[in-house]
Length: 538
Image (cartoon, rainbow, N blue to C red):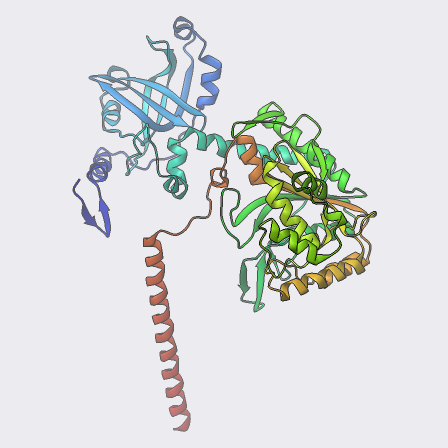
C-alpha cells in the first residue's frame, strides 16, 4: 500500500481516498464535520419496544423516528441499499431508496464510508427477512471519518492497542461498551446503598503534605507557590476520621487514589475506592455493612446475588464466612502462630517453608502475614472475612481486647483476591502516636510503604474520636467481579500504559529542546546583567 508524507503524517491509500471524499462533500456544499442533530429515539428506545411487531403492524402504525449513529455496515444494490448504524445502545438497520430520499441525499449515501456518522429520519418497518429496520426519508451527513475502522470480525486484536486506542475499542467491541456503561451503574448503586444507611458523601483533598492512611509508596509532586513537595493521596482514611471527630458520625468518599507501585491484573497506579466511617460501630458493623452492600449492588445492577466470575459461581446471598488469620494458616500448615512467642523460631519456620524475609519483617506478626499470603489467600473462593490481623501490619486498627498482639481488622477475600479492608478504628491518641513512631522505625529499616508521623491527626484524636468502624473497598475490583473481568485494565477506560518507543523519543527530543532554551535564556540573562553593570559604571 503506497504512502506519502503529508505534513509529517504518512497516509494510507484508504486515508487519501477518505480525504478526497471530505473535499467532495465540501464541493457539494456539505460540511464534512456537521452540526447538531436532534434525535427523537436511540436504538434502546426502538428495538425492545418494536422488535416483536409484525411487518403488517408496523406498516399500519407508520411510527416516525429520527436517529443518529456511526455506519458499521453498508451494502448497496443499484438504487437502494442497507446499512447498520450504531449508537450507545446498539445497532439498527437502515433501508434507503434513491426514489425516497432524492438524488442528492442518495449520492451522500453512496459516498459514505464505514465509520461515518449520519442522521436518519424515517419510519419503522420489517424487512422480508423479518428484521426491524428504519425506512429512510431523510439522510443527513454529520461527520466524516478520516480513518477506516478495524476489520469487523477482528476489531483491535492487539490487547495493548485496545487500551491505547480505547475510542476505537468502544466502537468495535460490544463488551467494552457494556463494561463502560455498567461501571457508573455500580458506582450509583454503591451510593444508593450507603445513602440508605444514613452516611453522608464527602470530598477530601487529593494533595497532602503527610503520607498516611495506608501502607504504600506515593507519587510526589511540587507546589510552586508554597515551594513544598506534596503527595497524591494513597488513602482517604485520616481526613475522613477527622470528620467523625468533628461530629459528622457517618461519612463516605468515592474517589481516586494514587500508589507508585507495580502494575498487574489487579493493580493500576491510579484506582478508585470508597471508604466509609461510622461512629459507634466496630469491626462487626463493617462486616455487616459490606456484606449488605455487595448484595444490594449486585441485585440493583445485575438483578441477582448469585454471579459467575471466571467460570466459578460466587454466591453473595449466603452469609459470608468469617475466619481468623491464624486459624486459616493453622488449617493449611499445621502451625499455630498464637503459640509462638520466640521470633527466632518464627524465622526458622519461614525458612523451612521457603518464605523470603526482608529486613522490615522484624516480628512474628509479619511472618504470620507472609504465611497467610503464601498458603491461604489464593485458596479462598466464596466471600470470606479474614480478621484478627497482627498489630505490626495494622497501624491504624484498634488492639484486640483479648489478645493485644492482634487487631480488630479484617480483609474480604473472594476467589483469591482482596476486595475490602476494615477496622475497629484506633481512637486512643497515645497508642496511635506510638504506632506512628513504630512506622518511622520501619522506614529507617527500608520500608518505603511505612506511614509518616501525622501530628495533626494525633491532635484530632485528642479531641475525642468515638468508637468507630471504618472500611475501604476497591471499586475497580468490584466492577471486575460484577462484569466477570480478569484484568483491571478492562474496567478502566484509560488504564496506565507504558509509553510507545516513538512517544519516548518525542519526549526526549522535547527535553533536549527545553534544556537548550533554558541554557540560552540563562546566557541572555547573564548578558543583560553584564550590560547593566557597564551602564552603572558609566
